[in-house]
Length: 635
Image 1 (cartoon, helix red, strand yellow):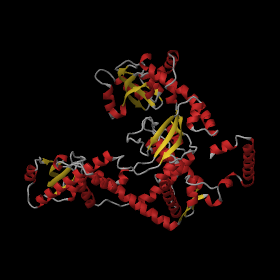
Image 2 (cartoon, one colour):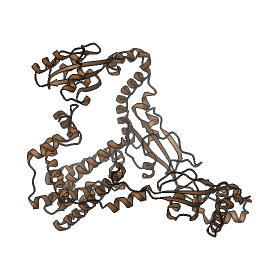
Image 3 (cartoon, rainbow, N blue to C red):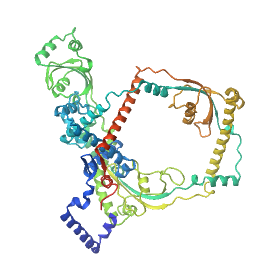
Image 4 (cartoon, rainbow, N blue to C red):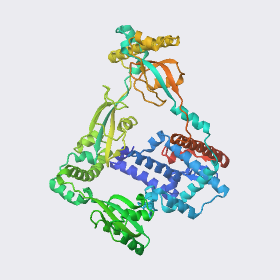
């Protein structure tokens, strides 16, 4: 649509029409206001929970925040369409409604939390602690800003969180995991079974003659959809990223050496020292302690005398930048190895510093890092070129050119993939090579169509444009096209049938009293005894299906199931079942109990919230919800 608008406005008639249209829009903004031009009053609230309203804009912000969080985790942005496909929009809505219901409950019950308690909880949060283990105001500001919070908004949110926790802890107070539940689940998880088994493979299937043309045709006709040709698309793309463009640029040694000199401090490994310190409340006490140190009374003796543990004293092997107090850092890095300083007046008290071993810093030679520096410099230069070329490509596409023509006009190289299916494979069944990494360009191409003006994909600081140039619809293949594949599949099925029949016959004999060793010997097979295994084990030869079948049986029971290999079949007898005793004092039992406890409390809180939502009344505006998540727009 945008390309069409740009083409329409490229001549004087189109410009006149677009001027009139934009004039009408500007007048409408002046009369009704910008907000009302895009949304009606019925769409200002996504949900109402009791007396609490969740506005469209609030929910839009929450939904956007969640997309950004997930995008940071995956290292690539998540689009609203993808989020809705994963059901993320509904999850966020459920979370918002649940939190609002608890907030409404807190208001109705008259619950509150003091400013002091809120601040105490924030200052006790380990996410906001500095290297000294204490609350760090600068780190606090940095973290909440990265999450999109102001200080006032974060404190207000934490007040709500504290009240929600009060309600949840009251609801779940006294809930304890029943001992029989822990024991039953522990036995279920840790029960082991041992089997004797034989493995039937293609050799036991005997000679399989080639199928007659009639049999092969009948087999193919019954399974024609399995051999169907998928839809293929012809796509073209232009990748314009700093990394790609940097491959074609040359950086001189002169420029690289200049950057090397500028970055020498950053690429060098700084000197590190083994540092220990004891902090005293005042200078007098520090002086007295320092005077005690001699050949018979060491620094470690002094630490023990003051009741300090190694963790209280040792900073480890650190660089100058790793020491928080600059005065202590200066003292530590002015001493020689195995030396002890005089008392140093620092930020947190008077300190005596001990230096152990000293690890010298290193600076890599230019030759050892030249290739990396040249690549970094080429990428840095390419970024400016990418931004410049982006505008030129967009101008060409705005003029109606597809990506192949636009690239040709700008002396760039577009790549054309003649045919690719949804899974990224070519018609020969092999993966298509040369597709851009870290993108889902194939999936996006299958969500587009021929002639559609697709938005560029942003990746790695650059852009990838793509067009769908052609579509080959899915179709039924003829037998002649896939005859070799059909014959292979027919043969595999025949082997499977024969092995299943042999396995079933063998199991019947075992159930009738025959011994597995005798049946194996008659078939020229070897009996294998497995090691004891659990339900979730991975065992060579044994497929998950075999393991599941074994755990459905009783001791001495016989059974059969497909093996781990394509043409394997397993016949087994269960020879041992061990259900271990449960030690409730063991770490495993404690962890299992904690896990079950969390599940019980979460379920109880969820039930309470569901009841709350019914009591206070919950209304959801589906139209506003769709608007806030980008599923639709209000025109």
